[in-house]
Image (cartoon, rainbow, N blue to C red; front, side, top):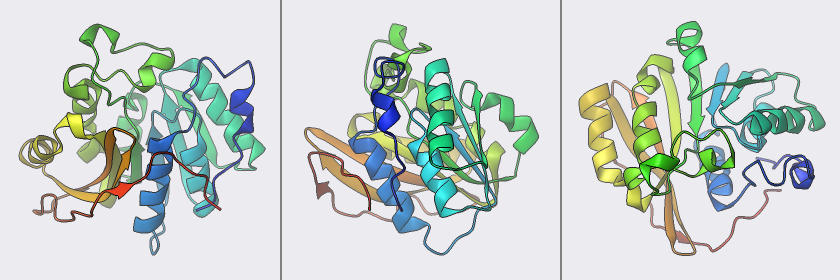
Length: 231
C-alpha cells in the first residue's frame, strides 16, 4: 500500500496542531496491507483521521470505495482534506465530529471497513476531550477512556462482514479489551500485527461481529524503533 504524499503537514499551518504520521501510523498501514489483500470494501470510515494519510492510502487502494473520515480537531480535518486533494482522491469526505457519532444513524450496519488510531497514551482524565493536537494522544486512565467510548459504536457501524481495526498500546490491557468487546458488544477480537517501537509495544486489533474467537492470532512483536514510508 503506497504511502500518500503528506509533506504539507510540515507547513506552519499544520505543524503545531496536527499529529505527524509516526510509528503507530505506519504499523496500522502495514496491518491493513497484510489483512486486506483479497477484499473490496464499499464503505470505509476512519475515526480520528489526523493527517489523513491512512484514509487517503485506503482510497488509493480501493478507488471505488466511498471513504469518510472524521476528526474532533478542526485543523486535522482540514489537513486530511488537503492530503486527499493533493493525492487526487476525490472520493474522500472529511467531517468535523467526535468519534463518528454524526455518521452512526446514517451508516448503521453499512460500514465494511472501520479504522481508528485512538488516543491510547495513559494521561490524567482531565486531558481527555481536547479539540487540539492533544486529542491525538490523551487517553486518560489506562489510555482506555476514548477507546471505551468508541467500542459501543463498532457493532452499530459494521456491516455483516465488516471489520474494525484499532491501534492499541500494551498499557491499554489488551486482554481485558478483548473480553469486554466480546462480552458486552458481541465482537471477536484478533491480533493482526504487533511491533515494538522504542519502549512502546503497539498492536493492531481487528474486531468483527458475531464470531466467537478471542485473540486467536498472536504474531511475535517485530522490533522496530521507527516508522518507515511504504513504497
